[in-house]
Image (tube, rainbow, N blue to C red; front, side, top):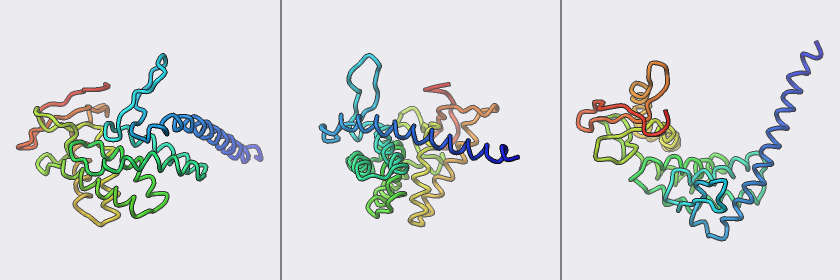
Amino acid sequence: MATLVLLPILLLISGGATAFNTMGYANVQYTILYSQYRDLSFKSYPFMGYPLQTDWISLNPLGSFTNGFFSGIFWNLLEINATRNLLKMATDLMLPLAPVANLTNTHDVGFVIMSSFGHAYQLLKSPEYLEIVVTTAGSLSTRYSPVVRCTRSWNSKEGFLVIIDNMMNLELLFEASNQTNNQTWHDIAWQHANRTMYEHFRADNSTYHVVEYNETDGSVIRKYTAQGQ
């Protein structure tokens, strides 16, 4: 009986130690990566790397949906081990992303801002960080079509394109709505989620990557995959 009681505790302790060691290793590795980009005044962010190449492929702060992830990793590390050094690195990588809040030509703003400013606000409750989140929600909402009942993903002359990835941007709208009591943003996110549930999922619960809608009447033109299965 004693063994049965102690086993979950031992597993919990073991798992906690493993998690701490993993995060500790990540802390070391990402601190090294940060030091490589510190001298560039944070005008670019690591985007892609190949084993046989010595340099990262980098993009400017407005160039990729992945740019918020670099800062976001340091906010994650900060939750495990709160140090001034981690706070500085997370903030240094986050601040150059502020102009993303005003972009209306892409749906990726949610990826970038919630990973960085959104995460920072959850931890520090700084009003200026919330302001960035709210501004971004306003920008993303301009891509919403009440006819299609979705926010546009990719800009295209072919039709109104919505990708399943866009679901990850809804966190931004819900958070901004909760913080400001803006019901419109809540409704946009809700409508997008519901339309996605009905149109993107196959009978076996796999998903279409892209659904192309008719922007005039909201009907589905086609469903297909541009990336993945």
